Length: 515
Image (tube, rainbow, N blue to C red; front, side, top):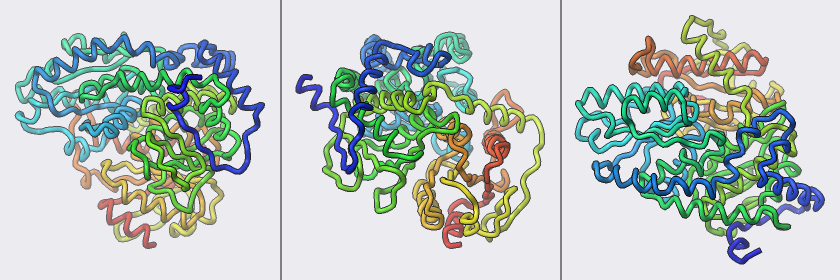
């Protein structure tokens, strides 16, 4: 192995027990088969047959570089300085990490909350003239992204601006979104259809927005390709990581951006691992903590690009961003092999979407109110007189699902810490509907051990609606339907779920944590 390859990824373990050498050797052999695009690794009937395009992205994505240079030059020539990416899950989490790590401005619109939409979208013509909207959806049918697209298209038209100067579309060939964009004469970049969303950060989905904001995307691919060549060596970081995730954890492990110079990486990693492995009542659940401290769940893992010599974590992975992305993708594919699950499908994600459609078309009955505070009321089919009663319920982790504007990280972490202290169990936090494209698969397909706390507006008066052109509902009704649809999907599994309805989010959180 060359010195260059040796320096790309550093894998530092502080675990006392050693991983079985035979297991490492087995995973290295599986890695060789992955590089040969052998889909049979994960079974006879697997999505992998059509989803292994990610393996060669460090090489094949270089074909995009001339087009990306031209696209960025066009954007500069039209005076664009404000970039808004509309996308969910894999379409937005990776680009957000790339932008933050490179200190570039990229606004991420991955919510149907009307307050967030209003706050992130320019409302004046002069601001809109400088704005380029990147509409990103693999399937071209993502309800959140398509709803945003229709709203933004109308906004641009209303201000008498030319649509073709303000939109770039990233999608699979022949998708409904691709066909509509071409009719509107928009610039379209087609992604590799054999790459799944959560494995797509080194594809057009990650590279188009990155190139537009001025990131050197070739460097990302260089670092990823250097990592690729090391995964079949005896000291393979991918094999070691997968083995640790399999042998040193029960079902969850702790991660954080605390002390890392790769901001947002934990959120990207959370989707990759949870959605890839959380099925057949097994899986691994990353628990994103605000800070690494004495409290941890499973092993603790840090990912950074500069060696911090931290003693706070069990494993520290040091790698440049492109290599870090590719390492975790490769290790997740290996982990799927060990868990005997298909890491490339998401069989339970569509269920919440189907329930959302049903809610939008009909009235549904809400669970009974179990107890109320000054700023909230809690509905549930499970008896509960206070949060302390959670200790009487049998579960292994709590998922907090907040259907609110993405500006309450600190408040949600405060609630997370309160629940951890109260129950001594793992607690995840996620914004809705974003988490439906991330941990939502684990909630329904992973181990049947979760309890769920849903945070949502008590009524739409607290969250004024915003009309979606061409629909008979607005964004407030859509996000409410998404929350109810997911609630129904979880309740069908007889898992404890508590709906916290509020009018003022911060006041409700403060009251809850002082309960």
